[in-house]
Image (cartoon, rainbow, N blue to C red; front, side):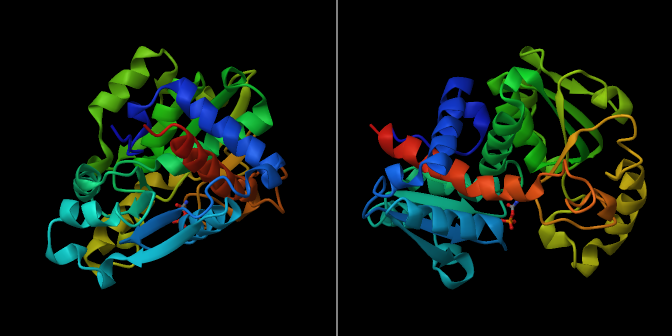
Length: 311
Ligand code: CP
């Protein structure tokens, strides 16, 4: 049976670690892999905007000897029929489907009809490809997952879910400092699985979360889903959230007395979830560009893993 990458809660730590090791090996020895996906095609279905995901998947496919084809939801016939019928057809053209959709429900319908792997490139619940790149960055900088602590500060959202599920599966401590939760992202099953590892912690005290001898990765993300940022109907809620979340802005004052690596999945809203004083030119341990670059290598590892392990 074909396996899809919807959320890391469906995969074990050994499998995730293997994808990351492949990503690291591809990054260090790209020439070894330049025919890995020769003549293969990846359909890249987008219902939402993107910079990193679009570019890293398409260029990653090219580097592996294959081809990524951009497929715009708005210009497709997906909106006027059943998504599973369309994905059954898509599976006859391409070896894999990557999809960035507004609703996990639609993604699940696409996965139900597909006979090739479907890779979730962000929905309201999960962002597994982001999590994979983030832990590749942790592996590179901390050496071992067990030597690292991921501290996520901000709105509990799709990215937080992927950090919690992938991190705890890999053996990394994960602290969440999330005074507000984005309701559509809630997944009790995922949280329960993470709690059982003993590696997942929740607190509202940033200093407590940063207080460890381990290598700390302090991470944040937008406080508002991208499609709502300029939506006038969301203006009041946006104002409320900005006020409520401001004490949790990542800035030099927050990290006084510690020296964490700083991560952000980008795009950044400077002056909101992260201050300018933590940009790489102002703080050497901010690794946002390495992290964004690793989206490409980690996804190449993921696609190589899926191709090598298909049944
Ligand atoms: N982090 C991320 O998914 O970036 P894009 O939205 O630009 O793809």
